[in-house]
Length: 114
Image (tube, rainbow, N blue to C red; front, side, top):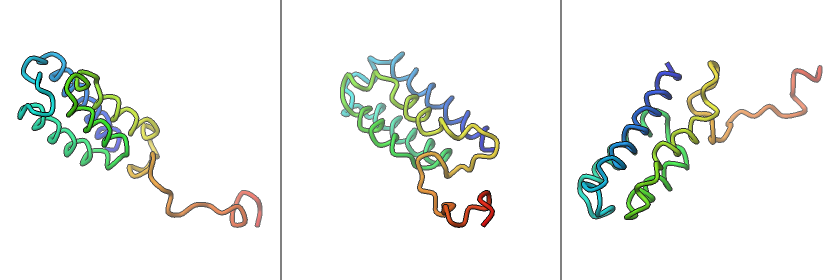
């Protein structure tokens, strides 16, 4: 389930960047283009809902609003950065840049034998 969401997010991010680069004349105005802004808002909502919030999504969103810089595949880079550690089968969706709320303390580590 988690792997499917990760690969769906990666595929959608690549698709969004291909659309923005391939149809660059439609998105030429950068932050002023309604189509460009709509695509970026939709992608930020979809990607966050699929893989959770990650700090890499904020600079990607801002980069997409800058004319010329939106030709960099920032959604693809952000999603691969956000999900790089989450492809292991037993990795929790909330991990990968998130704070561990239940850390194992050295004094209570069961591997040390008490």
